[in-house]
Length: 315
Ligand code: SF4
Ligand code: MG
Image (cartoon, rainbow, N blue to C red; front, side, top):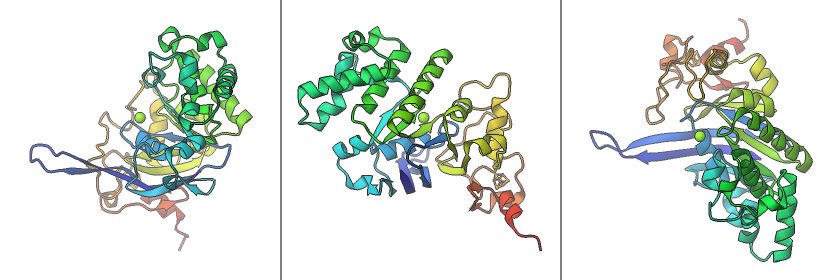
C-alpha cells in the first residue's frame, strides 16, 4: 500500500468572532507499507491518526493526495472493489456491531453487500471465518450483547476478513479491552497476518502495543509524520524530540491511558492552531529560537532542525 501526499483540511465554525477556522488534520502524509508488513502509527489524540485511517478507508474524501493498493488508485474504485482490498477493525466492537443482528449475519454483511454470492457460499465462508477467529457455530447464533468484549472484537475481525482483503486498518483495536484479552487479540491478529499474508496499518496511542506488533513505526504530530523508522531502531534510539518525549512518558509509574504527561505538559496540541516554524516548538524540551521561525525538512525520516544540522558534513 502506498499513501501519496495525503492531505485533509476541515472548516470549522469560529469562536467569538464568528470566523471560520481551517483545521489541517492530515498534512502531506506519504508512506508505503510492503505486503505482509505492519506499519504502526502512534501519536496523542488529535494528531490525525484516525482521520488518516478514515481517508485510507474511503470513509472521508481527501482534500488532495491518493492511496494506491497494488498499483491501483483507491479513489478510482467503487465501494465494493475497495471493500475487497481494504477493511477496518475499530476500537469499540460494541459500537460497530448491530445489536439486533445475529453474529453470523454481522460477519456475512460484507459478502452480502458485494451481491451475487450464493447463500450457501456465504454461509460456508462465515462458518470458516468464525472458526478462524476462535468462535463456535453456536456463538454465531448469538447477539453481540451475549458475547464478551474480546469475543466481540473477534467478530469484528471475522467481518473484516470475510472478503479476504489484502489490507486491514486497525484503529486502536485493543484499547477498549482488558489487558489479558488485549494480548489474545494481538496474537490472533499476528497469526492471521502470517497465515493470510495481510498488510496492517496499526494505529494506537499505546506504544507497548505498537512495539509488540509493528515492523515499522510512524510518529504523528499535528497531522504530520515527524519520525518514521524500523520499529527496533525507533524504540532503541528515537531521534525526534517528540518521539523521545513520548517514549519517556511511558516509563513513568502512571502513564495513564491517553495523554503522556512527562516532558510534554498536559496540554494537547490544537489542530486548528498549528504553531509556525516547527509545529512541536511550544512543547519541545530542546527547542531553539529558530524553531519558531523555520520549518524542518524531513531528513532520514525525521523532521527536526537539530537533526538537519547533524547531517551537514563537517566544514
Ligand atoms: Fe524541537 Fe526545534 Fe527539533 Fe522542532 S525543530 S523538534 S522545536 S529542536
Ligand atoms: Mg483516534
